[in-house]
Amino acid sequence: MFNGQKVSFSGIQPSGNLTIGNYLGALKNFSSYSEQYKCFYCVVDSHAITVRQVPAELRRRTYETLALYMAAGLDPEKNTLYVQSHVHEHAELAWILNCFTMFGELSRMTQFKDKSAKHADNINAGLFTYPVLMASDILLYQTDVVPVGVDQKQHVELCRDIAERVNQIYPDMFTIPEPIISTTGRKIMSLADPMKKMSKSDENTNAVVYILDDKDTIIRKFKRAVTDSDMEIRYAEGKDGINNLINIYACFTGKSNEEIEREFAGKGYGDFKMAVGEVCADALAPVQARFNEILDDKTALEVQMKKGAEEASYVARRTLSKLQKKLGFVQVR
Ligand code: AQP
Image 1 (cartoon, helix red, strand yellow):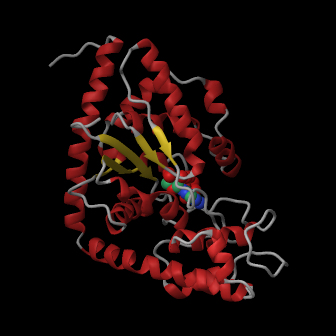
Image 2 (tube, rainbow, N blue to C red; image 1 turned 90 degrees about the vertical axis):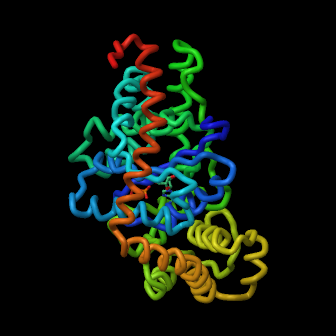
């Protein structure tokens, strides 16, 4: 709770250019919580360095991700928008929570298994303890709800376990958060391999539609999307490519699978792919226009960054010092 309001927290890593997976699974839904909840939305740059980043690109993407938050409809006057590394309490609480997290629990995280297979030359401890930093992000704000894609559900569940463990020893320390996973955009799949999640760090740029792709690029990518040899636009088991396209079309139009099947009955995959590309590009165009305006004024963006970090720090400091007192850390003022 924050001033009598429930709290929503979420974050996105500036580890690549944001995709329509990030948009439909997370970002697009963030603003729907603004009226009912006190919202903290963070650009999680500390998470991004679990994989090697080019410093200039990380810097650029941090600005861009914050600008995209605003372009996607998050008003910085209503929502606290900030950069994770600007609020040092995230790292401090993560250390304490590390001491309440079991090695076995972290070993079971599927993202750790996936990312350590992908980055076999850099299986660093940060990659392993990533979910503890994420738990710290969430618990610092006494968060009630965490809007995320389904890939992050396991991490939010671990966060709940950690919070419950701390609360058993130090009652009423943390609010236990609930993951909120949207029904349609929960997992957008790669256009090249529809069994795999669409990821911003995918090396195959044709597999991924970026929020900032122009219309021609978006349509070209959808035209090349992997489908199947069947000719029917129908949501069914084994039709992963078409299922993914139906899902994307549903997210952008609000139509049900049945409505979409009826709309494209008797039409070919080519027509359908074109239509998916069109609705996607049309929905992203206003976001792109706002993004360009916001990024044009970097000074104003930095002012927002600073304001957001100050607001977040105020709340984060309260939670951290409450736990430090409970733990027996000496507080000198
Ligand atoms: N394909 C997806 N479908 C639905 N939701 C998705 N999200 C990510 N990909 C999809 C959601 O976006 C939010 C931010 O994700 P993140 O940046 O914290 O990390 P991630 O989940 O690891 O996303 P990526 O794009 O796959 O990044 P990289 O390639 O750097 O690992 C989360 O809510 C996530 O669920």
